[in-house]
Length: 138
Image (cartoon, rainbow, N blue to C red; front, side):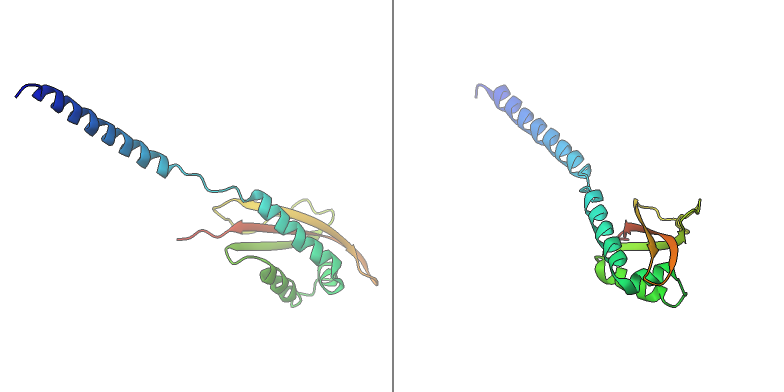
């Protein structure tokens, strides 16, 4: 029964390597970063704002807001937005200093804006600011 110490050292080394690799695997799996969605949200916002500015009915809702017509604008945005995103819009005067979102959101908020200046019959420039964020799963 020679070399019992050799087998014991090999078993200790294998156990140590397995323990170390499991700790490292667990640590690195916890630090997996979420993919960056900023480019996607930017393109999505620009597309929706462009569609609003090119549609004469939606453009007139922005330039001449009448309260109940905002539901049409909100429906258009909701139909063009993926289900995992939430949004808020603000229609402000072109020279307004504060055109911020009213609600607090605890995730990354992406903001784009577009100036919509007139319809065929009215000139009343407005700034349409579009806030978008990813819904958190709780």
